[in-house]
Length: 150
Image (tube, rainbow, N blue to C red; front, side):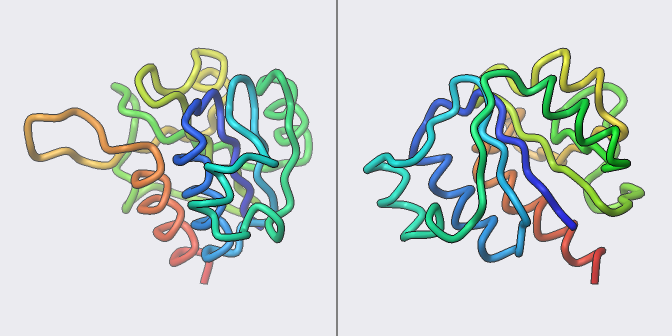
């Protein structure tokens, strides 16, 4: 089983794109946390094309509580973040069930989420920029994870 925790992603367009990707990737549930946009929302619906109505989701003001509950259920917490301890996303040792955490568009995942992580993963950047758009990065990582699950 694969879950996604969306932490403080302020753009409703990005959240909508993640709903649509979660639908395509067969994600069991999205946890929208903090300042993350949440349905019903016109911009989410515009990008998600209705996936916000078919992908189960919950809102929580605090991601830490959700992460603690998932860890108690033996869910591997994987944070997508460029960090000194991050492994490349395409060679990381994933195990299931798993929750992929994505963070704020500019600041990334919170210190609490990084501290709760069983695994930190990153996507290599070969150009001048140090990160991808959060929804794009989520899609890349989510599809690598489902490829491994198969």
